[in-house]
Image (tube, rainbow, N blue to C red; front, side, top):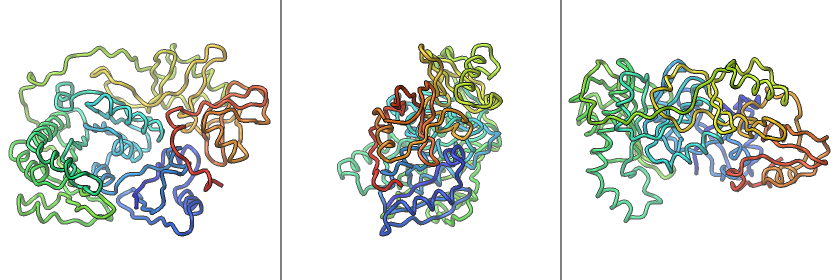
Length: 452
């Protein structure tokens, strides 16, 4: 059994309704498998006994496999498009990308991750799902507060933990090793929560969550935090979710409004609590200062002289209305152009790894070509040079990056479709379609037998 959600970002770019899409999935999978639905807040959470990760729709980013408990953590934050959101410990991006979806791919999310290696998984998921409103940073979350004070409207803190919420596939030695680290982990968890407390504005909110079951990392830690800092526990108010944290109430009355989810055979255990900052506080920031790093990436608007002609060329090559570009901000980097949702974040505060996704790359012979990730997002805005694949065989060769025989005139800038789905970019030479589908996603196993 697996839980999954539907990525509305991709549905919108392909002009699909969620109900229609789920009906299509039910037709694809064999009759002895099922898909059921639960609704929590604005999010439909689906459950299936089919290997949903083998579908083309998963590779194209329409589907994200995630535990129900993990989704509830992000849903509890209830973000709004006019808010600045921080996900303090974000890789691999499950909660960040759900927050982005709840914001309709607009507004601003800073997804911070201390491990540079783990940011690769974060970037991969952002690219696959076509997320434009996430900026990625690589800082120690405990020290990040030296760059932001009373700045973010909402912060998600999902820190490293003993991960005892799901021990089905964890060796007993690993469980014992995690428990032996609990004292060190609770110190890190507390420091990360205090850092978030400094960065969230007065009146703003924090969701603290862990995928573990110990009192030390959950209720006791929150009680300790509330004894020192001006925060209150607030009810998450998620429609469809009924909960009573009786364990928490025995420790501290207001912990009755926190969420404790016990592990089950098909979902992991979780602890979730929502906190509101009721007053500002001042602490010594000298001990946790982050060394200042000059931002090397200039944020550009569509009418900047540095990119105006580039956007014009892309519009001409793909038949895109130039007015569309007003909705984004841009970064030029080494012959590539990235685009992100329009926002009012102060980018000068920190050095970021990346914002948004890559829009186009420069081919020195032919000009600026849209990336496949961008094609999958811009989708219905593209009006010219569209190649429609007619068979599963053509789909497979394109997806695998191989040459595909096609009846289409030579063109350097084509958009490739299969049915309703925008797959990516390519070019045609001598009746052969050359694929620019991302190499990183060609290795994902797809069950082509169920594709219609």
